[in-house]
Length: 163
Image (cartoon, rainbow, N blue to C red; front, side, top):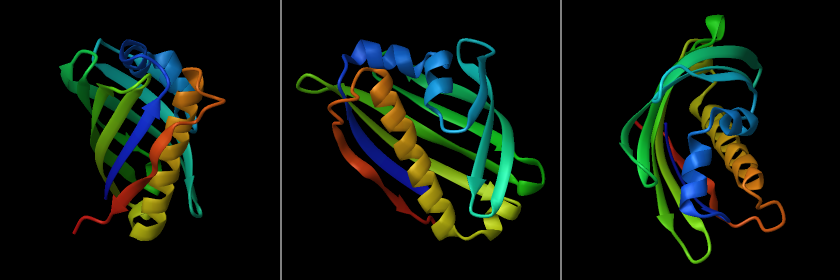
């Protein structure tokens, strides 16, 4: 599964970068996040509960930030295991650029799932992933003070099944 998205965040790029690297902010913005802790400057552990169709699971996993260009971009990669529900792993390239009074955040993400999750079908998995991404960025935007002026550009992230 591949997803892309673009969002305007009503905050300076330095503030957006800082928030993207703050475990307290991420914990508050990630839907279903129960725990998120930094284990080093570039790694985190997380526990997230998600319901995808009829399957509800608690995922425990690790995330690593690589290819870091401060205040400009990074790649986030990780894997989560959800017990009998299966696993999810993937990554995303995140880029920040200055806009007119805002920061433009773009991402390109790839993910794979296995176990019971893989049997749910790509349409359900893709629509759930899109909803989770949209909710994260809505929460993130609101956290940075954008509650009254949602400036989402392409919140309907394009999702395509990768063959």
